[in-house]
Length: 154
Image (cartoon, rainbow, N blue to C red):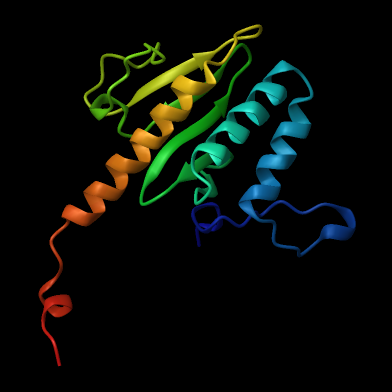
């Protein structure tokens, strides 16, 4: 059973043994665990995402990666020693007039934004990029052909 895919954690500690932890709680824990500029940066990115799309769904996948979705993955929030990386699942299909994408530029699908200590986030441009990713996801869902069983009526 893949608990990470459903958003539940296998992590337990002390008196919390047996509790199921929501993806949002796990992201909170990750931010707290980092306790340096990376935690602050991840918290800031998260706040911008949630402000840009109030209907965003927070998920916890791949053994510890925060994921934000709306009709599909918008982006992930990976943390490394020297960088917080926002990887947009369909980034190659998004317009980026402000030039936020600075990593994974050679791929056909994904694009990423590497944020380093001391970087300032262009909130207006990032908000636009997040909203464009949501629009792309929702337009892709709308364009999917319905199955024959869904089309047939009573």
